[in-house]
Length: 210
Image 1: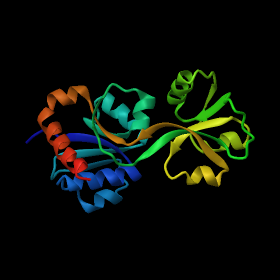
Image 2: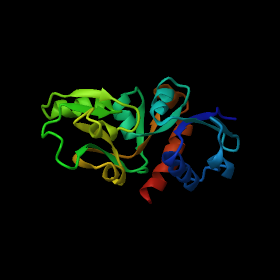
Image 3: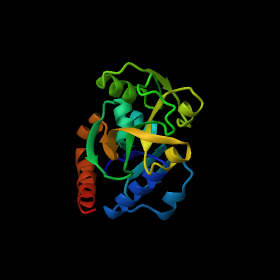
Image 4: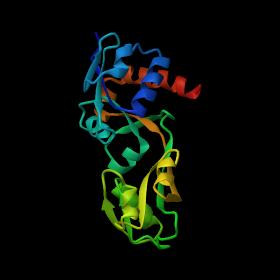
């Protein structure tokens, strides 16, 4: 029997959409897989093991080889800059990175302080715009930054824009479109190339027909 293929996946929306893609690619995932609270789920029928992780940790697991493959948002890959191969745009969990600020005109025209959980992305973006800003790292409720006067702007993921509106913020600049990507550990790609190529090819067929 071939070696187990280990895949790191985040819980939540990406997990649900990725599991649906895998099923459409004829991978036999048990129904209880979707509702599992386990952090490691084995699917012996496919000789696959899933590691269920926080979104920001997926690329780390793949880079260090504890997972052969992973499914991660492009936002994570831009922020983390991990040594992994990005082999397929799965075109799921679509959203975008944006700069936002107060809608009532209280924010200054030039951002001086920017709150974000994407400090590397934000630093690179404002540097490319020729703006010098102070980056304030936050891990949650980024929208609070401008509201309480901590920051002039935020850089965050925007999906529907509803959260911004509900907190009196507006999108000011579009940074980059984001989708989830299939990533691979470079060593695993050499050692398990046939199995990984098979998965990539089957998923590619599904994605191209979406």
